[in-house]
Image 1 (cartoon, rainbow, N blue to C red):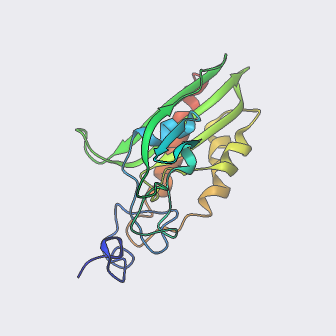
Image 2 (image 1 turned 90 degrees about the vertical axis):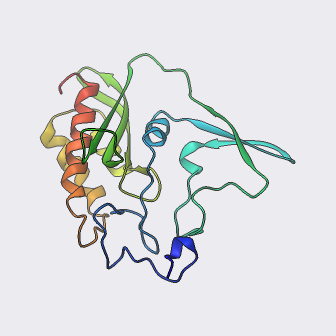
Length: 200
């Protein structure tokens, strides 16, 4: 038998061994996006240029990845005749800082159990605005828009960050064995955001 991702009819992780699987965006398939780089590029507002015989198009990298609900056999929006030609980052503006925190099971090289990529404009010990993107928790790099809005123009503290995360974490749907990822998300995001203001 094969899983739904490989053309089968069910996701075996839904009621099987699912320690490493998605807590957001799973639905019909509970894979997690394995990239360390993609969440950070999205947090930094990267754009991707896609080429095809008909020409080129550019879109935010955040729109490049596709959830299983769109097409369980694909993980991005590329058509059969398209390819990635370029990934481009905007020039950093004054006051912008970024940080990346990766929590993993082994000290040596390993995939992230949870990772947090953050970017923010630091102003007076707080953030004028922020981007927060998670890895290891969803089939795509997972953005936390409610948390971003909640920390905007605030002086950061661990308590404020954990309160800000509450609304996004309420949307999580952990499986039987991976609920431990929720406190790891709090830890990773808190550590990453505090790094921006030098408080970590």
